[in-house]
Length: 411
Image (cartoon, rainbow, N blue to C red; front, side):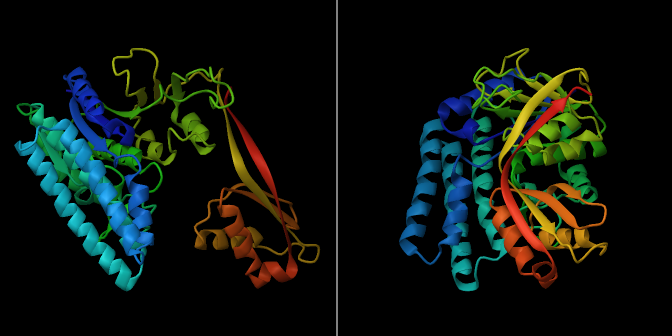
């Protein structure tokens, strides 16, 4: 039986109507084994992190915890009849997780907001939302099981932007998921928390921007590697039809990209398309696992969605994308001609400060080196270079705000 790994974002979990849409989708995909990955409710992750950053402000913390509780209670009361088992289970789970959250905030107030505390606090959104989704599916008669990704996805130690150890993750998937998935007599929906994993010593880690999409593709890859059925695909449910050829902010009637390969999709995603993060394709590209981006409001759509696979039309321009908030930084020296290793020093400094670099250009004699950074990274990049004596004494550092236009396709 085919396997589909679906990711539901926060906008798919906002009220009873949205949850009923998930039940409808579950029936549509009745002939496929299903794994659901859930994001936090919209706005919850940001609220959790801001709460952790302001633990000294008791009123702010109390207000945010009350808002977090209310947002989840409103949904629980919207989708369940009161005093039913599923209502009570969800409410008890919420109460227990909020109690854990308050304990962790007390630790942060005492010891400071270390990276592992930040990721631990950020994980509560997915841990609550996914459990509620599991209880909802059970209430509608679907066999479902809640799985925390911290028990499945093993990552490195890069908090806030962790990468998976696939061999260790495969072992967990083989142990916890494959036996039920391979059971022909039982159609169980696995509801897995998006965005989070754990490192080898047990600290919760988060996968960074696009983390829940990444969770879906990591799980799909591990099932492919460890299970007997290779007929797997990933579906990301969004509030748009798929990838658009041009940002609708510029052209409202932009064309939908229906078919695109992994390389082209990563290129478009790298240039400001927020529907998709390029790292989520890294997990599935070498396994040729197809990924679909579909509109949550129209699950029966037969044609208007995006499929990312190894198939593409090389004669088409697929899309034009932009990065508006970019800065080109140039390091120049007339005296340090032919001094080797300038680029290595730049990358070392940028890496130390966790700044992503793109579009590097260098003159043959290393007199001049230019590179591009985006967003708030520009100011941090300039300051970090100016702090280094090697650059501040012998090089002139200049910068200029730029926009980048990328055209994808037409080989």
